[in-house]
Length: 516
Ligand code: MLC
Ligand code: AMP
Image (cartoon, rainbow, N blue to C red; front, side, top):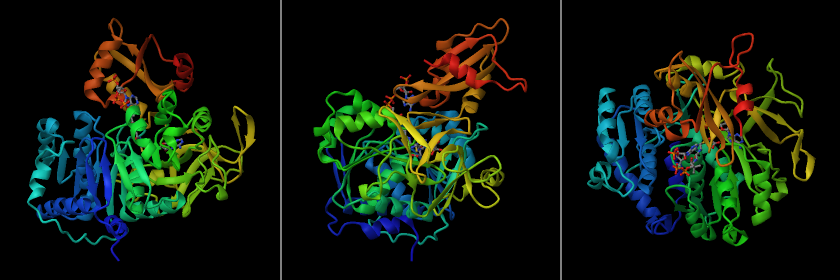
């Protein structure tokens, strides 16, 4: 049997190949046959390049059906897909390309100049362009290729994708995901969330992270279901397309924004069967307000780049209730435990570190064996860096309620991480950029509550004696250096940072002072 993830999708393509697979926000229709032929042409192009086994294909392009086809073609040709956030700036891309050493890089035409320069410097052999209007050299080159391709044979443990996640030390790590990691998780979610061939997924998430690329797209592909494809979250598109959709997935910010729009109501959701939230904590008040407004109970689930999906609230009412504030039960085939400082399982109701084991857990960090070892326990559990508890109680608007002992609640993180609008930001990385700025003595970066993004990045900076620092000028400089979602919304200038007796910056005091 071929363990290639694409072979699994192929085996589930609907018999009616002329049926619509993707409808775009601007009125284009792609059939399953179009997907098959486009991915075959792209796979033939990749195969014609004679790349070494295990070659990485790094991609930083705007969302389009062709960008999804490029991902699928990379799988189909047996290579390793490496998606990159479109917000990343030159210094960030330089690191990823230098670290991953991709054989192929695909970027937008607008970025070709600087991306190709640094890619060639790092030894990349081929740089193509792909724009969201079907322009660019990639499709032009693929056009001449045959539209039939035999999906390359892969073993379950072969790499399918590398997803870079920021690290607590400031250096991003590439999480290596295998074909089996992705296919087993996709199959699990297919059953757990009751995917059907007549589903219509409103796809508004970016396709360079787990949520939009794997969880959402794989769900529709495996079900042979149609996707309505929008380039990004947009309330007008929600109001236009949701009435024709049955499934939507989003980060909590999407649900906050939907509730802010008074046009959004029960009628907008008339065909919906499932709203999924994840990537960041969904506030109980959002969960409750959404149910009040629409009659729908959002299904919250929990996952991460290294493990794809781990835990989910039940889909079927017969299997239990969706409890706001919790992320539900471990998915079938996934083992989750909560342990204390000595690695001993915590009793229900007690908070500890969340650890996981299962076919979904990644193979390790790309070229970082040391880091990989540190993140696994001696008996093979992956340390998520999240803090949680099984059972216990949740306090909502209608008072306190007991949570069943097999439901997990995420209560915080042991890693110094900010999640802003569903994107992870590691303070250490931002601090190192700030510390390099002229006139900066030292800095501390914290997350503060934000009504739209859940958490917002805020910096606290101490200037060198005599230096005249300017908040707006510093923010302006950072915007050219790092992805926009990482740029602090505010930079507070102070004379010193609070420290404990060990000399460690007391970020909790800074959070208290600068929240709100
Ligand atoms: C945009 N901005 C943000 C931001 N997104 N600031 C903080 N946090 C964010 N997430 C800023 C921009 O810098 C800009 O600032 C201003 O907001 C407007 O930019 P925009 O591009 O117009 O924003 P918008 O399109 O509204 O985007 C917001 C968003 C987007 C929430 C729709 O961030 C988004 O789609 N997030 C989803 C992330 C996601 O898919 N995460 C899944 C990770 S997978 P300025 O100053 O320039 O005006 C994962 C595992 C799992 O975590 O479990 O799923
Ligand atoms: P990433 O590394 O981008 O994949 O982000 C993974 C992290 O997102 C997890 O380790 C959690 O901290 C967080 N996360 C994902 N889903 C949830 C959720 N439902 N509730 C709380 N945190 C979540």
